[in-house]
Image (cartoon, rainbow, N blue to C red; front, side):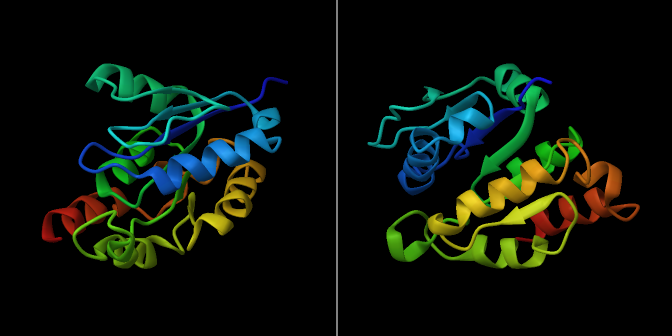
Length: 166
């Protein structure tokens, strides 16, 4: 049985070294045994040593990476959540925090709180929780329980509306 690819994305607006470093540490501590790990890391200062990475991906390459992933790991940005949902992929979220200079406010904490109980979404409150939530997502059955298949009817439509209100 082949192991799933894990795709890490930090979005396109701000660096998110805390997420990239946490995933690289996980990969170096044996997480790479779970499958290939590929990260889109943006303009941050940290460069991974234990996983493949690219600074930026074009639209088609980004969509192909999500489509080819067994699990997506991301910031709590609505674009990442909606794309994972559209492609039926479980997603692990680590919200950016304003106190760490990762965003201008803490709206991603609110977004993660709102999404926390949805099928196929696994929220890590801190980088220390990331490995546990990733294990939960991998154990949950790759592709199973993702937004577009297990969520109540119309959830992605409500999610898009929520994103437009934010």
